[in-house]
Length: 412
Image (cartoon, rainbow, N blue to C red):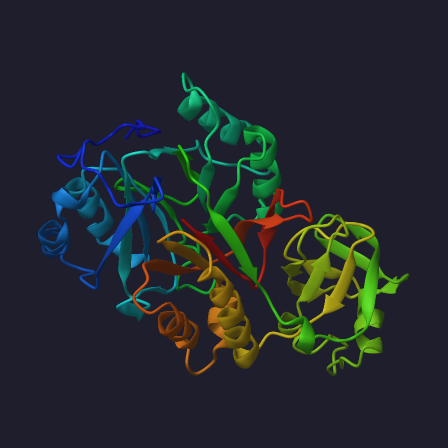
């Protein structure tokens, strides 16, 4: 399989058709429509189902398929079979669950087709990644952008979940390589406890250690929204990061993280560990004018330091929050209401797998809330290992960030 798909991959019989406009401005540069299947074992049946659904008359000159699926759809060969039916690139990830306006669930494959006469799509995959080395990313970027004039307007990312590579590395490395092209995406997960079947997808191929990305060229003006946890329900006290190394938070306000947390009233168990540490993420403010982000704590070491889900920069201000089902639903609703006010027709949503688990006995509750609020508006939601989404600064500029325990939204 080639390491990239050419940008002008498909032309449609709809070429030349005049689309609706308002005051001379095209209402939407990108249209979308969606497909889903629960046919996990029978490749021929799944491909026939997709073939009967796919209406080539709806396609414009350039098209792209975004897919998220339960890992078994790869293992059974269904993804490869579907890729053969589609006359355009297919890019995406495995996930634990996903939703469209008319369906939600875990053992599903969902596909959203983006199609446009004005916007072009270029899909690529890196060579295997080993550690936090920019070289494979840069090589893939140079390969897919060779010979093109201008910068892409947006990058859609589907990253592998690797033990030795962080979401912060991906966000920062791509910012450096692309010159700060807005980067919206996710790290793959799956239904296993250790996520050993999490994979990225390009065409009919799947990868455990390669980064798949799509570049959008043309007049694309996406709007980004980040919904984390409520500051209203966080601890009132704010702390300052006074010692850290990468994602290892060593001290807050000059004391160990463990002492800081117990000072807020968190309790220790019989072994001296902070109880329920994963339920108390940090609301982290870089103090650089950008929106605060969420950082989870994975563990507290015996000497009182916290292993976090991303960088904890010196001088950043943090607040300890809580994550539970009611809080997730409250904040999901709040960020979705903001997204509904943005221009654009299609909504792409990645929500942290931690939010899925926080739903407890009703794991589909957040997906239900999204369907309820968005109604029939086109959207594609799936769950994520880490969320990649730009945040806005005070001047309206964008800074690419990785997020934990967050719902991120891109409106196209």
